[in-house]
Image 1 (tube, rainbow over the protein chains, first blue to last red):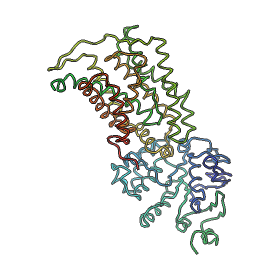
Image 2 (image 1 turned 30 degrees about the vertical axis):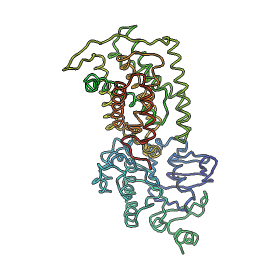
Image 3 (image 1 turned 45 degrees about the horizontal axis):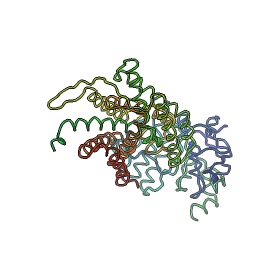
Image 4 (image 1 turned 30 degrees about the horizontal axis):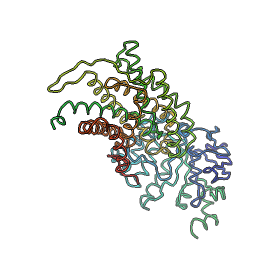
Length: 237
Length: 294
């Protein structure tokens, strides 16, 4: 069985500083795959490379069998590989509605944007209430909802969620987190990097642990929770 | 004092201000949006002015009807420069500072080439032509039709552009790129295409502004530089990429220039504009309407 998104021996970095030294990850359709690792392990670098913000210096990124590692970011979005970035990166001086409209700018999504918008508003009613407010005036949690909503507007097939609860109050973080399994109803697959290892492994079908730019341990969610190495490194016992 | 209150002076300030606003809008597409320091912008205004002059004297075509053609000429220069010089720069340069530095040098070269080519083709002597210069009197105000048209056309175009940018998905895309380039890429904006569009629009608008300028004053191959400076004052005062801020700043600059010259002497014109430029950078680098960068 071939994976929906397949990353093979990926290496990249910033100029001469290499961050990833040959990472291989496979993402199956309709599943949640987690990428775990300490700060600086290369999670965000990995996500930015898959989205095309950083060049793929060695190795391959394949989506539905096609090498997308050389495509510009917007072409990857058009194919359905969409990043919800760390730090949310909403457009602060545009309104919530304008942010969402931009989410559906790719040709494939634009035709369905009215329907998608209704679904997104149903998922995050808060965005409906705030739709004419500037994104920069939203709270952190609301901005995260907007970033997720904007990502969904692009009609992703693979959603790359980089630290979706980073910097949020625990209550809000939990609320955001609980919507993630619901996203699977959109018929997409999820690659998630998240600080909260315990909650992540609960919803993840499969996980990879990144260490110093390499894949350390892999396994399904259950086995990783039980893994003494993961427990020691992340779960604090 | 009577002079300062005269409607004549007010009208002159509005005409000049609206032209500055239009020139500023053009530069906003190239500098505000893609951060290329286009110091040849005023020279494109000059090209537009010569195109209008040439069409009128050679073919008898009124610049009013020639505007689309004139815009087309400068827009094509813009597209040519994009593909010839700047596309690779934009794709391969990651830091804004590097991009600004490289583009400054490249555009400096473009500016020198444009000025000297035009000087070779048309000599350095100033040119002017008589067109639509009958006087219309409304109330106590006498104005030539050409200046009135320059005012109306530049304001119309500036407002049309600001509406287009506010409501079209293209305009949203431009705002998005200004606010966060990486975020613009990951929502699926084809940054390269928006940049090409910005070149075409920015240069086309410069050409139109030049045609309108040629209706109101004499032209020469070296007329561009003061307009370049004026354009930078406008977009720095108005805020990078802020079109409506730029409109207000343009009109404000027109008023400052006309009224100061009326109070002092025309010889101070350049000093005044550069003075406002330096003052703007020192006092409000974030623009009159901008928030301080944090």
